[in-house]
Image (tube, rainbow, N blue to C red; front, side, top):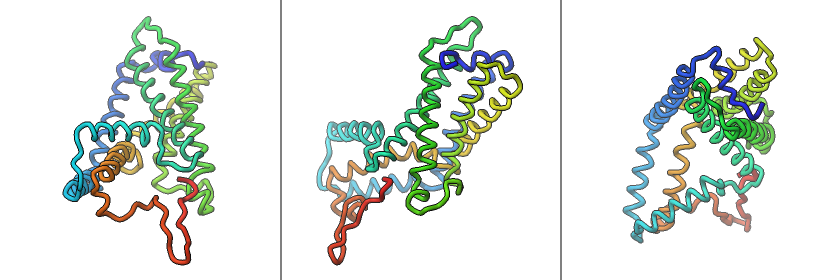
Amino acid sequence: MITENPFSALTEIISPTIMQIYVVAMFILVVGGTLLDTLHKKSAKYFFENSKKAKANATKTLSSGDKMSIAASTVASDILTSAEFCHANRRIAHLLTMYGFVLFVATSAIMVFGYLAPGSLTPVIWPLLWHLGAIMLCVGGYWFWFAIRVDVTAEGNPWYRIIRADLFQLSLLAMATFALIWSFLQFTGAGFITIVFLALFLISSTVLFGTVLWSKFAHMFFKPAAAYQKRIVIADGSRDNLPEPADRPKKFGLGIKRLRPRNY
């Protein structure tokens, strides 16, 4: 099962062109949703205004080399290893979900656009990585959902309490889960039930990529920019004119020290 391109057998009922159009449509939905989210929340305006203020308060001029070094540090620490998460379980779950998502989406696009032509053979590595990505998504996502969420572990709310902010996480989990079930049923030749789970896979994927404006999907694009800007204001001295960051312990009256949240 895990060594076969699940989209190849699908060409018997769905044209490769239609599959490719669907992938392109999902990409357009993500781009469009992110742009609308930026305009609606005025995120870009807020970001650039803060950058302008920070630049005016800077006490040191950073060279191009300094900025490149900060960018590389941001990528290595805040993006590739998610070092901002102090809680080990939260960090591991996040990395599993993030890299699982990247593997799943990238290999889906590679197999749909590169190996659906008649007579085309898919290298084993791509379906292997596709299934691995879906499994990583499920492990990290379900671990986070049932055990790590702040409102579950710290506030004592039941795991099944759902709000609109959970749309991204739930649709992501549904997409990976239904994809794995569909692949297994297709391999075993389960018949009509395979089509049912294919439909569930497509519906959950469409919800994930089509609801960027209402979910936390766009957060993935804003986070690197915010992390980079945070490092810039520290390096050029403009942070000295701003309030001390919340993640730095402070002492209050009676010598009480503020502690970091358990799950971050």
